[in-house]
Length: 125
Image 1 (cartoon, rainbow, N blue to C red):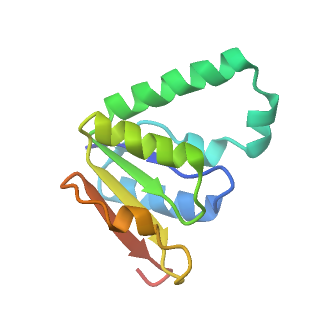
Image 2: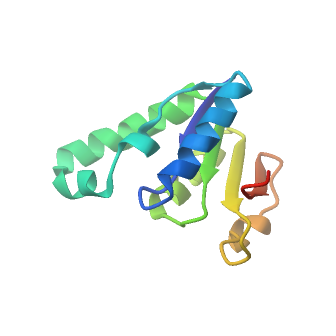
């Protein structure tokens, strides 16, 4: 199984690493690990051409994946765009969020789609 993992750049990189380890432990291959490698500063330093190239790469990562896994504890426009792109591409999406009571992705909980699962997690799960 190939997975594309995305988490907002401002999110918790340690959580992202734990999620990636868990997915790899399941035997899933990651299409990319850019969410733990890329920094917010990278966006500031990008030219418009580089930003356009990144958007094309993101679409190809989604196309190469069997499933898209999105960490949404810290909401981000990019993650929302990737969720939408994945759904429009017919890819199943697993939306993860840390269950501390204030980061629930309310809009996604109300979404009626067989392709989207919204799952909370904590340090205990």
